[in-house]
Length: 103
Image (tube, rainbow, N blue to C red; front, top):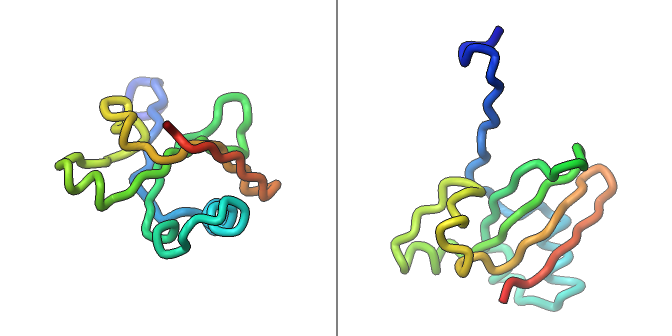
């Protein structure tokens, strides 16, 4: 039995640098500025129904700092979705990246 009385909690991941495959897709396929791409950060969570995939949200830490918004994890953007630049899904085992720009 775990310390929470049998209730399993999921720890949310902190912001991280972009995975290589995600950044490469943005630079090579989407033709985005490499300097910008590699300065971005992302937060992720496991994808529902796809155990080896992760959903992600990409943001510019300069922009979030300028507006005084602190990004702690995935749920931080539930309050400010307009600060998410891109979102998608990444399957590391298959090397597959699905990415869309947020309007």
